[in-house]
Length: 332
Image 1: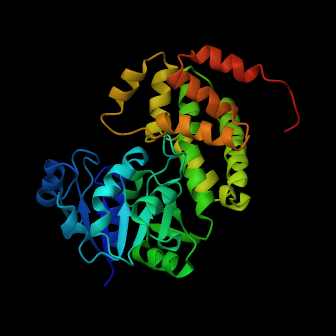
Image 2: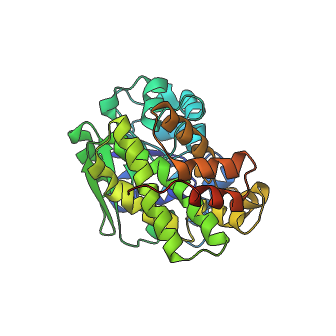
């Protein structure tokens, strides 16, 4: 029987652990805080991140990562992108030598400008064929509520991709396989930044035309960057690109959109973070690293640049809008 270890008991880690359990996979969840693990074990609910959502009775949680990793042939990494390296350094020696490593984190590492699969490879020494990424329109609360959704599992090793696919396929969760790891990761990182832009626009009262324009031009930005890095345009036109972008940019369940909305309404970064109730809006840090990565490849990403300036350089929302609308006219 397939055994999976899910490292990270936030909303998405918990939701995906539930998917694995519903698919018949033997899964254990690692939580950083004892009170989260206790709630999952005793109440069968992660009341800290998915309040009101019942979890399978057989889904156990613990703060002992060694116990979680013992014998696991699938290791799911469900911690925020900017903390992945530090966490993984402590876990690496306990990961099985042939285990498949599946990243749920969506971002570009600050400083190194590495994708998550590259961080995993660098820290663990695992061959890239053992590393996969999951990306798509996967809002955690909806999936934990067993609402139908699809996703992409990207891995260069087709056999491992199929193994992962079987481990998480349920009547409500449909995973597709894809060999384009770069495309899946670029889409996952960039969509959070564009969702911040959509939230900001919504916060200042902009309508659907504006949101649709941001999503479309955001897709152009992520496609330019993805292609420069070696991704396939078709990946970014699929679930890991357009699909994830639409869900994250339009849903009130999206942390990044909600964070941006507070900024658009005139709130401070501190107020926006407080409104997130301790959950991470990945795009806030990723906008800086995505922007730097794009610059290193001479890729133009004006929306990403504007979001970075609003979040980190004190540019007002009004100035950012004027800056974007004031760009020279050119063909699409």
